[in-house]
Length: 540
Image (tube, rainbow, N blue to C red; front, side, top):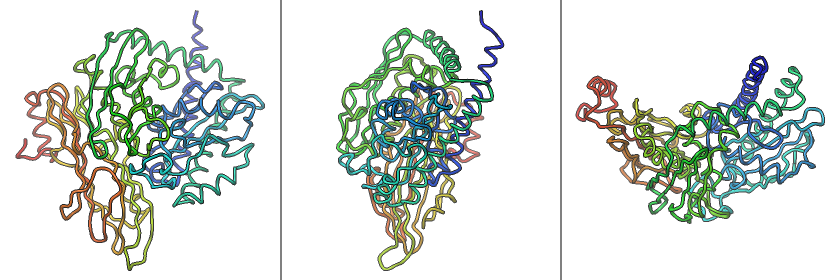
C-alpha cells in the first residue's frame, strides 16, 4: 500500500531537485561571456544519478543540448572511469559524436560527492563564440578544419584547473578571453549545482539519491507508457526536402508505434554531405525524441525514463554522419528533424499536429574588421534569429519564435555592443505566414550594416529559402526566406560571404505553414490580421 506521507515527501524533494538544476542554469546565464548563452539561453543543465541517468533538467535550455547531454554523460563515465574521479573534478569535451553534435558546444560534467560517496553528476553545455578553424560555418570538408577538438578529459582535477588545456585554447581561438571565460562559467555552473545538492541532501538527511531516483523514474515511466498505449499502433512515413548546401537534401523518416515503444528510422535520407551540414546521430536522436515528446507526452518531465521509450535508428547518411565528416552547422538539418518526424505523426494522429515552420534558426556569425585604409575594432559576432512557427490545430503559429530550439531572441542592443555593426531594422514580415483556418507564424526582416570604415564577412547558415514550410490539412505554405544586399544582389543561403563598407545585409526570414482550409478562417481573425499589419489589405 502506498504511504501518502512518503509520496508527498518525495514529490517535494523532486521539486527541490528541479530548483537546484534551474539555479545551476541561471549561474551559467549570469556569468557567461558569449551573448549566445547570456542573452539567448543556448545552453543546458541537468543532474544525473551515479549510473549517468538524467534525473532532472533545467527549464532553461534547448532540446538539442539537453537530450544530447543525457547521452553524453555516459560517454564521460566510460572514458574517465570511476577510479579516476575525485571531489573537485570537472571533465570537458566538444567531441561532436560524444557531446552535442559540433565543436562549438562545450560540455562539462562534474562528479558530485557527499563525503567520499559519489552521489551523482552535474552536466552543462553552452555554445561558445569561437573554436578556431574556419569559424562557425558550413564550408569545411572535414571536422579537422572546423576548429580545435577537445577529447573527453579533465578540465580540473581535485579543484586544480588544467593550465595546459587553457594555454592550448588561447593559442587556437580568435577570442581567447571570451572562450576561456565561458569555460570557467560552465565549471562554475556545475559547482553551484553540486553545492546546492549537498545542502539539500544534508538538510533532508539523504545519504544517496537512489530512492528519490527510483521515485522519479517509476512515475515518469508509468505516465509515459500510459500515453503510448493510448496511441494508434502502426507505421507511418514522411519525406521532407530542404535546401542543403549547393543541392537539395532529402530527409526521410519512418515512425513505428508498437506497444510500449516508438521507433524512428531515418533510412532513405540523403547521403553524407561534403559540406558541414551533416548531423551526428546523437543530435538527430535528441531532436527526434523531442518531436515525439511534444506530441505524445509534452507535460511529462523529461528524464531518462521518459526518453527510454523512444528508439532512434539510421544507416550512415546525413542524419548519421560518421567521423570525420564536417558537422559545424549540424543544427540547420537537425532543427528540421522535428518537422520531419511530426509529419509522420500527423498521419497517425490526423488533426492533432502543427504545420511545418521555419524550423532552423537563422544564425549569422559575422567577422567584422576595419576596411582597407581605416582603423577600428575587430570582433566576432554571433546573432540568433527565428522565422515563424507552423500554425497549430487550434491556434495561429507564433511569429519570429525559435521552434524547435527554444532559444530566446537576442536583443539588438546586446548584439551591437559586441562589435562595430548597426542593426537598422528588425521587424515582423507581413504576408509571410501561410494562410489557413489558423495562420502560420510570421518571419522577420533584419537589416545589418558595418559601422563606417568597417566591413565584415559573414557565415550564412539559413534554410527554407528554396523549400518553404508546408501547411497541414489544407493550410497554405509559409513564405520562403531570402538573403540579399541592399543593392539587390542575391546571396547564398549557406557559406562565408562578404559585406563591404557602406553596404547593408538584408535577411528575410521564412514564415510558418498554415493549418486547415483557409475558407474556414473567421472574418474576425482576418480583420485582426489586417489591422495589425500581419496580412496586407490587398491580400486579406
